[in-house]
Image (tube, rainbow, N blue to C red; front, side, top):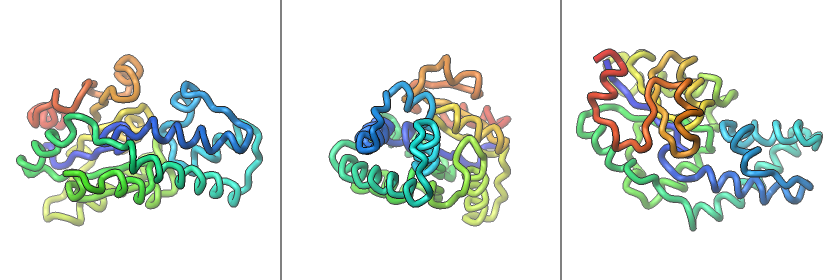
Length: 228
């Protein structure tokens, strides 16, 4: 039975993955690193900013301590906040899909590796600003995807919003990367992959269904994933 839909944010709700790459790339130049788009998307996209900074520090022998890691993230976040005010956009079809869920009284939430402030900034002045019952962000967890911690916390918080218990098998998770899909599988939730960031052939082994846009889906499709 379908009782909730949980969205990733970057690459599912907002077309922000290119902005994350550009601002990490610009930040890393000061550290003597010129990271390619392919390397970023292959190795780092699914991480939180802090996890990404740690991995890059290790992979490129920066040997940053925790203070250095957080300074790198602070610089990246400053650039991102400036850029997102100009270029961030909600992905086509998302408002219509969320409206369909609302019309069917289906609780919706966000579980993202982005910072909460970044999510609020990207939702600001959009029709989706107050659409989500729960938002769990990088600020709220110790381990990012593919660890299921964030999704399980999202489910815990969803269960505090209503009288009816929601189990993992009642949830459909919408993701754009294998990291998020693996987290959903580890949480024993159902999965839909959207090809906003990676092609279908890179996602299909991790998910129950792949779509090119969310408006390809009806509520009945989500219900069928959960067993009717």
